[in-house]
Amino acid sequence: ATDAVGILCTTIRDPYYADMLATLEESLCQRGISVCLRTVGDSPAAQQQTIAAMQNTVRAIICVGPLAFDTAPAVSVPLILVDGYADAANVYGVTADHRGAIAELVRLLMRRQRRRILFLYHRADYSQSEKATGYREALETVGIPYDPALVLQVGNSPNEPGRLVTVENFRFE
Image (cartoon, rainbow, N blue to C red; front, side):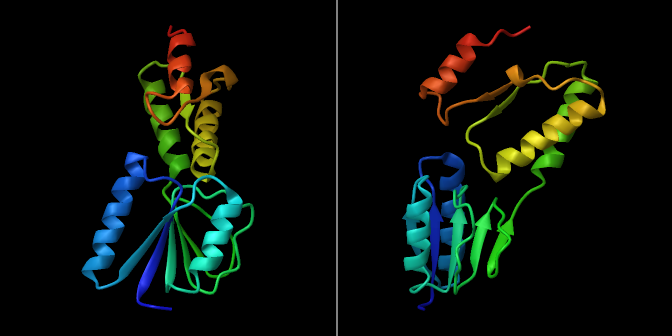
């Protein structure tokens, strides 16, 4: 392997991921490490194939964004999942406390007398699952029943139909 690190990203169109990619690339380049960037979309097969091919040419692979593989691939170089988790050899996850953060946010809204708390999410992934669990746990803690009508999947940009339909059809009370 060369003195390079591979970075896989589901999309570079997401501003959060674009900022993270820029920060990673800048930091690695300052250390004299080349970066090989590849966008892989949401296809588990494309993600697996790219990881398999890339591991022969880099010394580590960093995955930005939620990858969709069911089981982590066998890798010969460290595979670092940013905001992801997989229980496999040579695979490392860097995550935040999504569950605790959302639970605290829900508790804050309840202290402000809010009882119908809307939970919006973009895609079903590890991060969303942890946030949804925190949301439900916080509601249960104070005896507010979970209402699936308050859990809505939305698009990733204001121009996507999912987000527009959600806003137009949801009754705010």
